[in-house]
Length: 299
Ligand SMILES: [Zn+2]
Image (cartoon, rainbow, N blue to C red):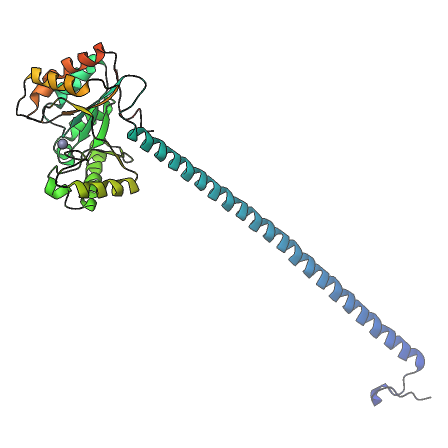
């Protein structure tokens, strides 16, 4: 019997061999399907695992980023808190529960710096030097000595020429920066920044009052505070004042004050200041004053 299936090529096969052929085809087809299913499952499995690992990695990276951003935020908050505390301390510098005095020397270093440092060392007290950048460049070794002996180095600008430094608020900031660079070099401390400025001639009043007020704002935007004084020896009022005159001015301007920022000068022409310093120190010691530096109020 002849059997026709599909095209003529199968003509002549019997039922049995035909069934065998169909079964074989089915088995092959099933195997292929199974292989495909297994392959697809493996593929899905592979990508799922990969996805899980990837998601886990992304999650870990996100967590790290959150951690870093939290740390930065915390650091910023700490810095902000420190800035506000420092600002508050400087704003309240003329009031204190205990008797304290900040001896301050402007315009140095000079030929008198060594004498001043020796007197301070004899009495074992620390003081504050508001240095001029131009003088720092002229006598860097003296600035290094001031710093290494533990005295505070403040910033008094570079030129001390009013028309220059007060030509604009920006000029004040530029002189601050230039002086700070000079100090950094002199003391070999790359990160040095006193963050405390003393305006030549003082912040308040005078011809450049408006510029100075604007400069104060600009300095504060750059996290730089400023401090004047509330007592003086009058060592810059006349040329070569006598020791008596210095002591009289000191007594007059410090009377009734508990927290004193005393203005003196460390300049070539102010030899009497250095010579009167032991008397000045004795005066405060006898009244029970503590000698402080701005390191004590600026953290
Ligand atoms: Zn000055």
